[in-house]
Length: 128
Image (cartoon, rainbow, N blue to C red):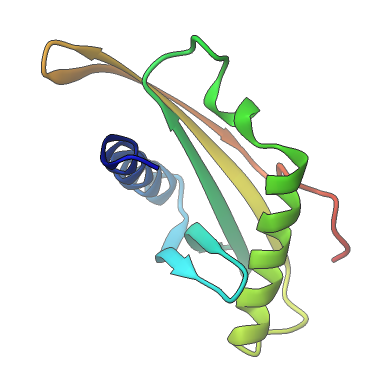
């Protein structure tokens, strides 16, 4: 991933964290590394752990950002979430994987418009 894309991803993660905080989520971690990969955001709400994948794009030329999540990426997110819970010795807790999709339209040197979509419990192919 290029420097420009990393910077865009960081901005998107910060926007997503503020957005979720306003919705009552408590952000407990950003860019958390596990033995199998990295989780963008980890939050808690109503006693559940919420693992959040943030997808950010500058345009919708290739479709909405969330549509870039492949089946392989979904499996990786499930593995990362499971690994995090094992690393922290957490069991018998409700958890889910959400996706926050952010599209930013740029005008001149600043962002003019941001579109945010939040997909709760977006990846359900796992056993709870």
